[in-house]
Image (cartoon, rainbow, N blue to C red; front, side, top):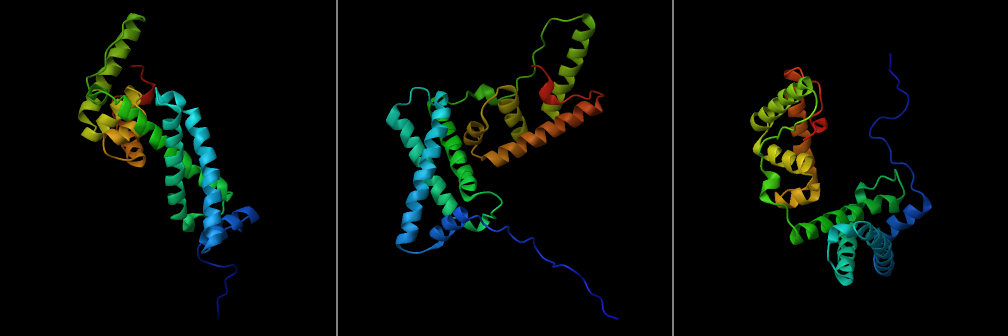
Length: 223
């Protein structure tokens, strides 16, 4: 007796590319003049996006002048272009090529604007250091007692249940609202690692609060 199976096995096939995405991919994978032309066209597209993104984040650039602001957009477009050309194999066609490419330039603008802000006005050391949570007056006696209990548990959890890196990230991002990119630069890390530190810190604090009978998200605690 033989067994028969229907269908195919193996990894899911990539969806077919739309015509525009196919032209971008073929042009970037080609050699000679066609590739140079496609690279130039893509850079112009990325530069427009970069300038728009930088304009939207203009407030973070402080007293930066026009040429300096445009230089940030130029650098972001160049670095995004390099990253895109090196990641063509990862494009699966689940979106248009330009939509996929925009993510690279948005990331570069975010990193460069934050780096500029960090250089001109870096966060203070105190914004990364744990100094405890201050109690606020107000509310009924019962509410004040409940708040003091919550702050006591939170203070102990931040001090005892977080690693030094998790504590620094949680204090900077969650309590002092330092941008993720700035924290990454200050700690010599990257966005993904900082997000992971923050996620782990919040999970540890949530578990500590739950163990104390307090079912509340640490981000909902008013500091």
